[in-house]
Image (cartoon, rainbow, N blue to C red; front, top):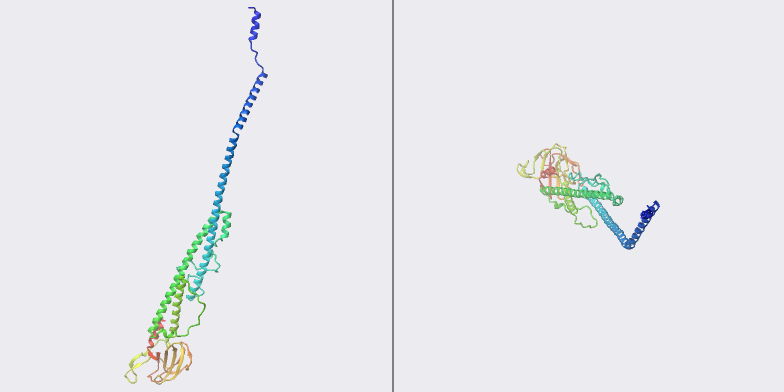
Length: 406
């Protein structure tokens, strides 16, 4: 083959290399194609799955909203419950404080009654009659603040607790618990005071009962019947009828008042008895009451009184209050003074050298009724002293000894 033909054939089979411009163009086309494919895929996905994604998003948002609403509702219910509990606690605290105020007023009234029964209307505490009282008695006006007892700090009011709770719930609850504890402690203290008052009242009643029994026995030993003094005119009393309640303290108070009234009545009786000495100083008896050898006849005779040694002119004194019924010469008695003490009780002072009283005169215990002498049927200076009940002579010694008991 000729050489020219071989050259043309080799030229035709040789590949001409591409340039930089064609390479850049190819890449741009490939990127555009990739973007178009991606956009087409995204558009296709959006068109296909749009409704499902939107529904899922809405469902998630709704679930979150329902959760928040449920939590808010739960918190609101808790808040309402706490508010109601706090309101009930405040109302209960207010009622308890009102009850404490009522109890304080009742204890003050009881204390005044006890102080009057004890003979000390100015008494303000239980410390004097009852050493075992757990706390000082209630003081101050009847407008009650529980914290004022025994120097305690005043309690916050329910309104103050409400404001404190609103501002700081934890602090408010803590303050409420503290107040609850102090109110409970105060209630226990008032219970202790009430028990102490009951013990004091029982002690006063027992003492009055024993005193009345002792005085009643004394009057009986003197040969007197307390019933003879019952007809004396009582002091004026009155007032509206207020039946007693079932309160144990009121019933005990009524019993104690009756015991004290009986004791006072018996004391008035004994105060009117001739139990004092007719002569000053120690008594020296020269003749006792009862049968004896008569100094003039030397035979046995009844001596209706007691003879006391004394110097002429020594004062003879009334042994009890009474009215002079006799002040004159009376046979064997000589100069005699008779004092009527009421209720059939009479005393006589005989053989006097002089009179210091006159008939109808009222005398008090210790009043000088005359002077010792030796008038009448007498062997020497002395005082003949008699005590008579309903006209019958009784031994004066029993009355004189009663003075030691009284």
